[in-house]
Length: 560
Image (cartoon, rainbow, N blue to C red):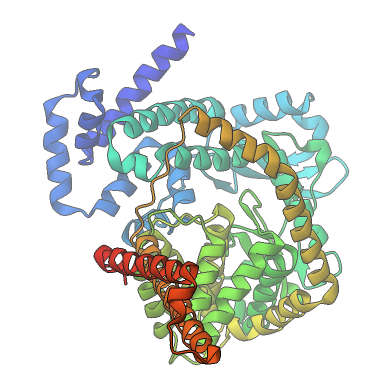
């Protein structure tokens, strides 16, 4: 425990110093951290020099790179959240470098033998000591199993998990302080954001999770000869060591090499787009980081996907919402665009619906004159996230991963074949989604689910009413309706009801007078009927009084 606290103090000082050095010392001051940890004045001077030449986004990127693996990963994951982070900062986070010096072969050997509970020589007939690639969390080595299969072995950096957990614990504490002291931190729910980022990082630290993702995506393409997913060798795989089939090919961003090797770049582009759209729109489980380094071209225009640490998941409902958004853009319907936005995200109670409608209308108009074949799905969805950011509408993480995936794929495809239209390739998938939505079986299932939901609500209603009644009796319920639209609606309803009341009383009064006049005429006598039937006179008098009183009250309230 003491060692842990000492480690936290040392790392906390590093983080505070980095904040200050990159011009964010004022945040530490607001949190009261500078009162606890003494910060040298020279860091403020360095910070001032840094601010003078760099934008906020650049300073954030440099700050994250200085603090190492945890912060680099946080920045990379945060770059997929345009619904909570401004576009200019997103563009800088995309540039984050994850290239670090490799760790020694002795450490690699020690980790593998500890994880596999066997000697390196017993598991591998060959093992290259020099890594193929090195990143902040792990590095990859080429090897050959004793059974003869060529493999790529990913080994996690020593002590990286404890370092990341220490950083996350410190970040949670900073987030707690921020929400307690800073208004914008409460508004953006900083702790919740950190929790979400921490969950993603922990998933990447678990290589067994990555292996399961790989096998699930392999199942999606088991009948597609144009897509290759490497095999996982579970006997040599743990949470810190991942062994998969070695893949040899050309990266998709190396277009000149592809042409020289005789590849048809258009076919490659079509294969990649079809694969990603199938994962997103049909299966709802997709590769979340398909940058060119993770996609290789193999002979016969076969596409190989690698690195499944980040994946996205979309429910059928969310896939339908995405389809509804694209259809709304095609139909040029602002109302449908608004409906799609509110169905996808968590809309705050204080959202300005009028302004949201204006922004949605602007978004619709932006694409009104764009030919359907030229429309960018990724760009349109990221424009949607921009609208969400301005109105504090929080989108599900998987939806933002999807947006980044589509943008990345569009960039890859544009280099392969600038004439290739993703939206055209997506049309058949969209039609299938529409057919599925209109399928009587699916509609019946949806109705059945709704009936079940309503049934649960009705079953819970007596209990809910009882609880509300109990709260009201204790005087603990407070209802505050201050929404301008609601007030306006209530005023209109009030005026309408007063006018209806006025009309009813006036009609009753007229009917009564007409009845008296007709009765007098039918009696055939000159003497007034009122003098002979006092009860009618009394009724007339009461009705007249009530009528005048109601009329006076309505006009006095100013709500007629």
